[in-house]
Length: 161
Image (cartoon, rainbow, N blue to C red; front, side):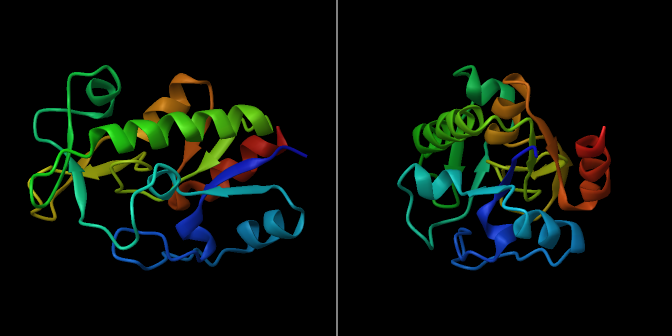
């Protein structure tokens, strides 16, 4: 059985920036949990950021690839540069995926770490834009397929093939 890396907040753990969870209630996730396939993680917490913590976004004009390549930043709402912590979280996540042989990940969308379909504009204005977070980008670079909760059926199909 293939292990699946999963955002801890989707599993009900209160690790998000606001100190809450974003629990995903889905029959597939429940089944995979019963099968012992899930590897929950929170890259920000693993990197030492507190919960709760100030919201952070990839700075305007940058994207996850540029942040990973040292050319972009991630900043909090009060303009604190938290890039180093997010990069540490991304590396820890890739290492965890490799250690467990994960070829698939189910990540919360919108996060500057885990977002894989969209992230926020970097202006803390609530505007979504297509893009990835640094963990999603790092996992994809490492050969791990990344899915959002909206694509959980696609993940199930990939696991069956």
